[in-house]
Image 1: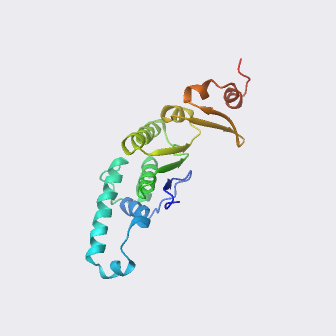
Image 2: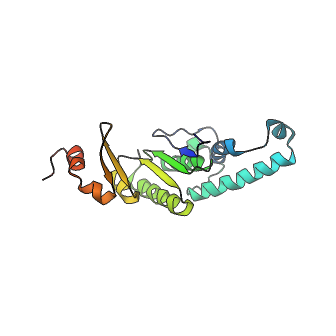
Length: 181
């Protein structure tokens, strides 16, 4: 996936809980680093320079995700919303062109959801990143999407702008349970 330019998060958080926030982000960069294991073993100048550069980039990603000052905290000690943000930072560490977010706001309170929605919007605008969002919270979907595809039991029933989809009779029937009048 990483080689193809795809970064992703999972519906259930999959961090390395006993590693720091920084180390979790560095794991996401692993496929992009060029020093060999021999360079690492011998601590060559090439390896030291690459590691320093990776840590600088890792801090930039933590800052972007709103986790400034949390680099040395264990992932398991971060609040739930911050763990979601850390997972996004790790996904960004591979420099994807497409970011797949699977239910990123699942289990979040309204404030965390609003903060994460703003972060996703910033990623799209500041990084020019394409985001494929799988999400059940329609306020989130409609608030940050340019185009929406609606599935009902695995079948596509509507596609278009948020306004078009919001008014689609099939969507109304499928999600509100009554035929549109």
